[in-house]
Image (cartoon, helix red, strand yellow):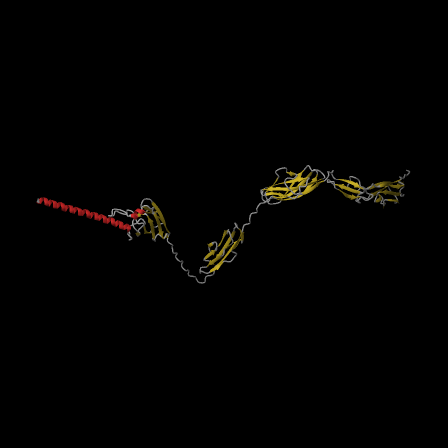
Length: 517
């Protein structure tokens, strides 16, 4: 019996010891779970050795949604949790500031509802998670980064929010240039700026020329700094009036303004002329002689391809139109080109009736419209033979090819008109020259007589030197010593007094004498 008692005591002791060990293990595990839950739900800051967003401080507030951990409560939720499980998750994710340098820090913050867990990722390749419905984290990336939060709903589903932090390089603080120490007795700088021409139209160009002396720097507005102490040039083509004023600074820092004409005036480019309907003018007809005539006009195409033609008729159309009478050419018209200058245009017509008035006008057309000239007229004269001369009393009459007759000349008596001749006709000189006796002895004398009609003047002369004037006369010769010829020369009444119109000669002979041998 004693042995049995000790055996039962040992079994009881072992049972108690085992119970204590189980309870201790359970208590230790429950304590670890509660610590983990507290890290996810407390409002205190927790800094880990390294977060997905760099070495940063992570903090949050609020309670877990859903089963946040293995607690001793057995994971049972209350009525509020069951209500949230029936709602879709929502989220916000923001970063402040949104722009910074890589040496600064920003705060990434989120809020949510109806979530049980949040997964974070970044474009840097990092990731993390949290069960806090809201919270924030300090981040310090070295380049522009986009953060993405995936919020998982308590009853399923998820929603995504994003925020971007832009990293810019730090601003460099320029090192101030040292203040130059002006040398003593420095001559002032000199400079000139000139632009030629001074005026251009938009799209044109001008030449800018500059020079300087004793300059340390040389600046031209709307150009910039140029090499000092040299002569330079540049072609400029501004779109508006521009000033190219220059300033030069010597080594002592003294600044001067440049001389010269430095303003370039830019004028608006002229507008290109616009085309329009043709400009036409009907000119007088020429070469009018039935059955023909020549119609004439002036046509300006006005900068568009233009065709032109005439219309004519024996009936008055009132005003020019493209339906009256006959068109010449019959179709198509004549190409007048597409320029902007006046062009003369003529067109011959045939088949006209004599003694008839005709009406005609010019018509031209281009893509901008049709234009009509004024209506003109011409009259066809009767058909006439070639020009000729005729007489009307003592008047010489001339008739041309248009059957127009006019007085050509007047013939004064004794002249007269002769049909078909353009000059007056004068009667022939008539009369005679006689020598009595025609034969005389040496040393003897004779009588020379003459009488001429239709003569204006006459001269009778001999080869021995005798000479007399008049249209009639009778004179004794001088002593005749040898054979002598007497000649009468007369001029009629024609206008040419130098022309010899009549001549007649007679011979006075010597009676031969004989000697006995």
